[in-house]
Amino acid sequence: MVDLKVNLKGLEFKNPVMTASGTSGFAEELNDFYDVSKLGAILLKGLTLKNRDGNAYPRMAETASGMLNAVGLQNKGIDYFIQNIYPRIKDYDTHLIANVNGSTVEEYIELTEKVNELSKIAAIELNISCPNVKEGGMSFGISCPSAEAVTREVRKVCSKHLMVKLSPNVTDITEIARAVEGQGADSVSLVNTFLGMAIDSEKRIPLLSTVTGGLSGPAIKPIALRMVWQVYNAVKIPVIGMGGIMNAADAIEFMLAGASAVQVGTAIFKDPFIPLQIINGIEDYLIRHKLQTVSDLVGYLQM
Image (cartoon, rainbow, N blue to C red; front, side, top):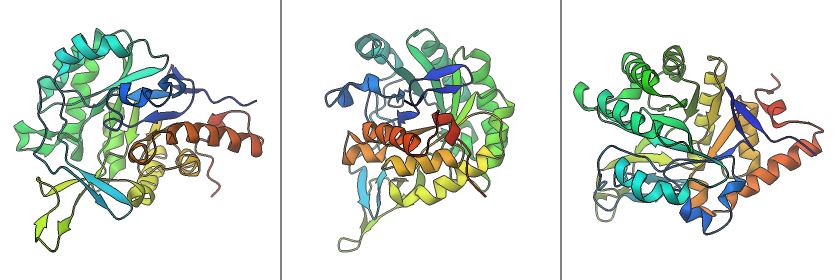
């Protein structure tokens, strides 16, 4: 009836709905509920070079219309993933995208080189919200020079589609988007979580062990939507939108604002079936509005 396929600079997806990294592990958890091959892509839990235990508990907290998390990229490292997890998930009939993280440019490079060898990983999502230890802990993604540097060096060794995940904790996200585009990014995904905090007023203590954490969920949607629209109008590469998408209407809004595809994250904690509901809802919308392809939605905001 309608064509849901999406093409991101030569990489074709069966539909525009992806999971967001860190919200469904390495796909196996979600596959317990339904066949994850129905999704456009799965963003794998963030990978690092070495084992990371993550932050101390408590590291998640519910907030008004959202949640805070400070998990801290807990994972057993890329070598463990290659040996123990990748063999179990590599044959899912959908794209697997590795989310890579580092504290130095050298770590990003080494991690990317290892992911390059995994034939069933279709793309890399470069998370530049990580602290740059050589620059005093400042996030790679909050200044143009550091965003350019890590993207440029990873691009040199990356043989796959390179998607750069942008932090919203900046003054002008379009500057960062143009910076990574100029250094070879194939696409950008946005937004990552906003920095926030929550307090237990009775105990007079923060709800997270780290005091601050990343805010996600419906509360951030209007700001995320604005940033996606701004970036779409600032760059020529595809934009993947995320931030508070809870249903098909939300996803369609992001696509009208310029997103070629969307990632669903916090909603999965509420109901793991929401990504499938969004796929069906987009298809229904196209039929009702007599549109032939999902690409007809992208940037089709009537001003």
